[in-house]
Image (cartoon, rainbow, N blue to C red; front, top):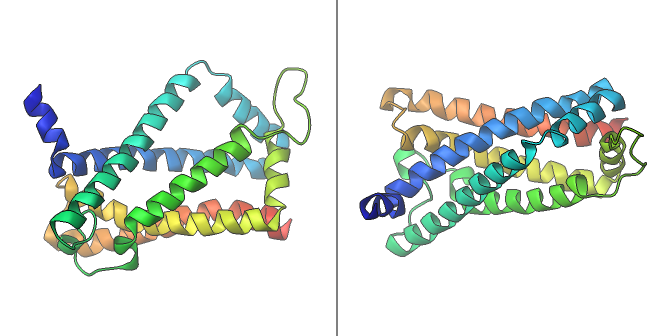
Length: 219
């Protein structure tokens, strides 16, 4: 047991944990984004989707697991950053081994903390926020109206967009690090992985930005 703990506490072990938790969080981002597109199907579709999620008794297990994954990712990221700074002035998560330095690679810890701050605000706003209209007789909360109301606030929409851009920066390098850490990349494929990582970061950021842009500035 002590040997296993020593491995997990090593820099390599923590990088593996970062990679695994990052992959799980990426899966959540994709599923959450897909669900959000029901906003364009109208209030009833989106509210029924939200109600189906929160009324499922397994939601508490899923939320606990997701919170543990997120906290594990953040804590290990901070520990790795502190260790790297103490050991030598190099970038977080194997920046040099992946090639040229980039803004994304040099600001991983900061973009991660900004995303964490955004998540707290997001939960307070939408999960625990006050509905702009009461729930229906069957207990379905009007999340759709709440989302539209918040995005109609230009300042909030701009804040949301800026945070999603930071998420895109974070992902553009994190995905490269994930492949490298788990030994899923070969030197000849690094350039392809880098391009796909950047495109994925841009795609996720753009996907989430569609909602504040549409409901905050177009609709």
